[in-house]
Amino acid sequence: MKKISIFLTIGLFLVWGVSITYGGEKAPQKIIDFAHSTLAKYGTDPIIVKAVKAENAKGKTLPQIKELDKKWMATPGITDYMKALMENECGRYLRQIQASAPFYAEIFVMDNLGANVAMSDKTSDYWQGDEAKFIKSYNDGKGAVFVDDVKFDDSTQAYLVQVSVPVKDGNKVIGAITFGINVDKFGK
Image (cartoon, rainbow, N blue to C red; front, side, top):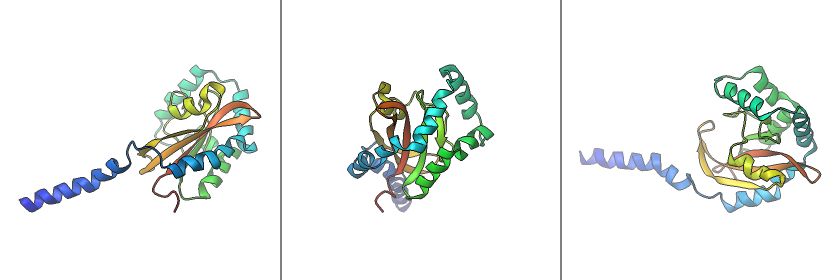
């Protein structure tokens, strides 16, 4: 009986110990530095800026975006609309960036209201406008680099840090881009 108790204790530590190690911790400094030195530059990339400008020009309203968001979250698979966001020029470019390093778990671009413009993979929802990744990086049109805490991501089954940077057309903030960085693969 004592052996079973010890085994269960060790097993629980191994299972939950990882959460204690990473869950809710601040992002490692090397990821914060990478966000400011490298990832922020993608916010002025011509392919990304062009895609965000085109999406903003469509003039979608927040109620329209929220309706799309409801449908998105209720869809288990990938619709033609979702596929279009992965296969447009910007979506293909995001997949190239993702393929360039093993630590990029996901990348997606948002318009000026926080709706998806392009993505490397399907996101859990369409509208990010009510989430810190958009709110803090768009920053009411002022823009800022936002590095979130380390969190376990169910879709990738990994500990990620989401880094979000503003997308800028000249000095004007027009959207945001989020990079999901796999903490265990970064720097390897």
